[in-house]
Length: 613
Image (cartoon, rainbow, N blue to C red; front, side, top):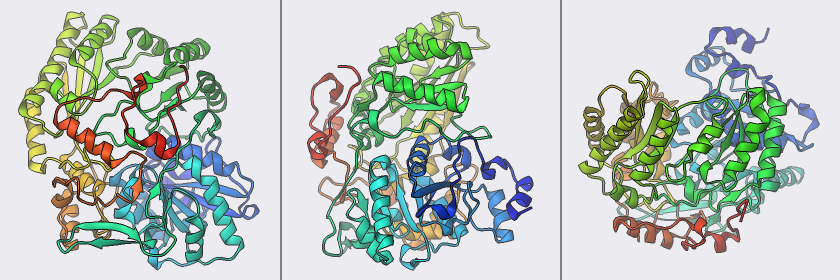
């Protein structure tokens, strides 16, 4: 029995580390030229719910010359056992040490997983700092939404991939193989990788600071390095690789279902939403493609639910046709169909009834703000009337529970907007009573998060409300959202505060991360592990103030730490949208045919793709 087998009975959820799941791929280690470890810096059940992992796993393992294996952040009990026995971080498929791979590829989905990246490098026996690594260590790369402000991680990552991974991965692996065949040094390999559009090598850039410590620019430090790195985009999702045999976990995960991505991007233009910018333009799959991929997933996984995923699935043009066809085909097998993201303005009770013909669950809507004034500021494009009309119809049709998501601390927010949240929740509750939902079953859950300004959005210049103010707002709402049938949840404001500091952070925050790692910060996205005091100490030791990053208003003319990363949307457009927000003006959905002038289509030579004209 090897060491791993000895450890597994001692830890929670041993299936997180066992490997061997259905559809997992184990290739001959010596039979391929390049070995990649895909690292998800969070627990197994979070990482295995990520469709991007499954897509890249499918692509790389489809190559005869390469393999990809998976590694997740071990939960603290497992980490303790590993460190006490000197067991390095290992992959699930071959259980080989991660440092034996050619490439260690992290996905960056959330700023509060950054501490886990450092912990995983350390557990793997890989030096934290890129400059300390030589040819005997894997190349450490990263991609995902947080790579659009890569600077806080610049010291730890050899190169970032900006944009959609399936568009880049094969070109990058080919470049890596070419460098390997030519026997290039690590530095030579980085220059070879630079030939692939969308690759950012932070060590080849220098940060220039002003006398007051502000960032003046991030500029190439050597000749031949591009001044800006532009994101890569898949232009046609119908022809893009999609995993029809995804790995099926043995244990329950966060999203335990077959996922079919029906479209990428969103045309709505909510001004706080980073994903809405990063994944532009909208690209819809043909309905036939969705049905074919769903059939493959049902055939190859045995899942009891098909989830049609996207940022706003009810906007998918042929959503009704797709849902009806799927329910007609699979309801007899007890396979449910779900739409994880619904909008109150285009919600259809008939569609919801169709979706939930097999199993009925609660409905979830995200009005985001309590008043129409503030919904206009954020360009949500949903009215209170939309919400009340749809939930009223839903209650009459038999639904008994509704979840409502809001954000507090949004720019220009006042107490009246907070009162609006409580008022809206009360009206929804009243509609449930009027519809005759039994008092013991009627439930309206209000979930509130704190606004976090994100790079590349119209609100990137806006400050986050100070931490005491966020806590005060939460307490204010807590006092108002009481009563039978009402439930109130809110996210840890301290966690959102540190998230905001890193979301707008610069290269100096690398020192904070090192301090945080040494202080024991890990799994910071999990409230039971997050410690604000440790993070404040990490900032103090680095001589930095998190409030300078999270709570400061940035000027339009002020250089931003991520200006050298090009999302395709022009800064002029983001300024225009910010000004329109402050004036309470809304911007139309470009799906209606009216170009909003964001600049992406001409910049990236990519246009929206709709499944049906």
